[in-house]
Length: 291
Length: 172
Image (cartoon, rainbow over the protein chains, first blue to last red):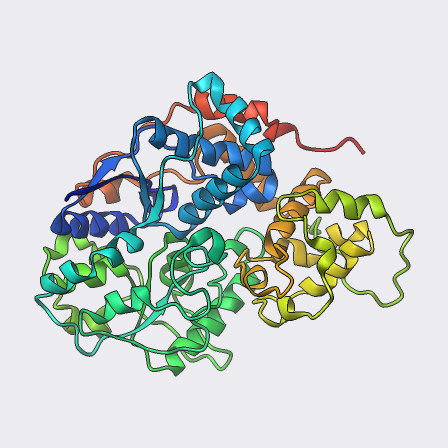
């Protein structure tokens, strides 16, 4: 049975990480997952707007959900931020009639209504359901890749909203990564926030958190970081450039998207996997990835 | 430039004007606020907080200030340095939606003009374009990606006019 979803890209992926979209599409195509363009998508709502005004956030986010619902589709997104915002909105609108009425009043002039029929999923959730199919597609083992996998916050917390994996000991995406022969290493700071949402308030604090994370990843013997979120990736593949510990030692590790890792192991054409757009140099792991 | 947020740095020598029970009630009505008064100060929230060692006032202290009805809480740096990781909310033994309450405090602070400057610009972009960032076309061309689906800005503007996004500021 072919699965199909409207694919919600959000703002950060088309702006900064087109290699994430491209590698996601390549992996989806190989697995027979149909991705339908999300016509009329706006910003997901985002923690930024939620921080400014709850009503505006719920309306912005609720409109996206209602668009997919009107077209009779479910939603898949590769971004933790969009996933968190849309799921959280769905949670609030489902549970709280007063907010549901308020949002539907704002949606009515647009000919839309939220009733909660559209399901919202993260792309890695869909992949996890297809674990067996993925395993059969692995043609190139990535032995020697030691991954510090960063699940990110909004994929797993709050668990009553996210509904994916154990919030204190997540391991589902790690299982996918290890199908390739790569090792997902244990690192103390794995569950710690990447600091990305703080870039707007204090870059210093955001970088301090990233430094703590990267000291942990390096200490655990990882040779790359893997994420499933463009907001987290902003920290690991942009802010990480030139990052040092307090003694001046480099903390830089290559940062990959989970779809790039799976795509490489599935032997997909490297062009759409978009490795040339990764900013932190991949030289140290090129041989393992077969680049 | 002096930051307009996070100016409340220490309890030492601080005198509070009054305890305002209405403020506690107001916060209890925010999204996630219903169990606010169940906080018994175990500080598990601060134990797992990624910015606990980077703020002047920690999250369990914020919770206490809320129960005491101290509006000065809106001036603590914890409000805007919360990274929204939800670790505190996930772990709270009393089931309090701590992170969601902090979002509500951010809303209240923003209305009073207590906000990092970045949020002012972000609000403008969200209103003007319906997005936070614009697509990078050359990258999309290189990877042979289709253009990002179009958005009719009039639709999102109509909604955001209704929620008064651009007119949130309180008259002091």
